[in-house]
Amino acid sequence: MRNADPSQPGARALLALAGAALGGSAAAGAAPPIVTVQELRDAAAPRLTAEEVRALFVPGTVSEFASSGEWAGWVKRWNNSADGRFVIGHRDVRNRWTWIAQGSWRIRPDGAYCIQAQWTSVQERWCLAVYRHAGAHYLGHPNLATAPPGAQVGRLTVVTAGAEPVLAPADWSGRWQAEGLEPGIPWGAELTLEPEGGTWRAYLQVAPKFAPCLGKPIRISNLRSLGFAVTFKVVASEVVNGCDDHEITLMKVDDQTLEGQFATGGPIRLTRP
Image 1 (tube, one colour):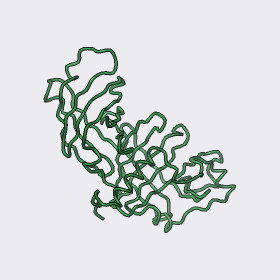
Image 2: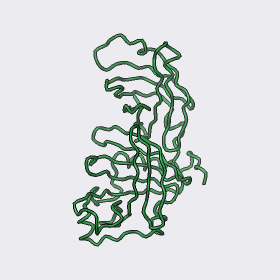
Image 3: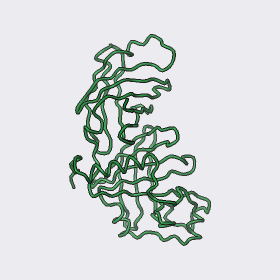
Image 4: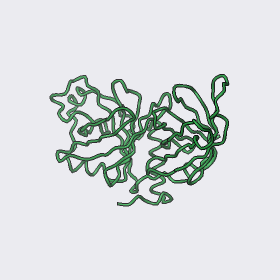
């Protein structure tokens, strides 16, 4: 299945819905974002069959999953591409930062939904069953009978529009204000993104100090869509000898916001002025 033309209404609508999901969607109604294994047991929550799971995760859908445990309050969002690959974002909704990885998804013969993703410093891999509860879906342990009763289970929301979401130049073109932490120092930047490139000018948000890489217009190259995200390189080394180049990957939160990270892991947020 080929990626749909991003100008098509179906693809654009799905991208808009997916962005709302990353910001904290009410798509699942009143269903709580987190329940426990015991709650699923008490409600005799049915586990979806392999056929039902395949019907839920059709290529072109976008999945949102409420993280639990130490990551409670964070939301994961990814696209279920026809080739089994995806771009996944893990968003701290409260502080508005998004970390991004690439990986793959599959459905086991028993109906368990599996993903693996390579984050900056760790690989994530799991296979979970899909349960129906409180008018929503939840991803949990494949065997509730043997799972710890207090274990938390996150809500799953799957958005369908019949076309794979694709970030297009219209989503990133224009002027932006950037802010981030790299490496652990708050900084800002003014940038202009075009269909295939642009310009970047960075500054510190703390007391000014000499830094030869700051304040100079720097070329942005290799700007391209990854389907569910956009990536580019800030080529600082060609302006000042010794300045580091930076690779950045971003996902769309809404029409005014892109969030993501440097290849080294530092977070970055772009907003339209």
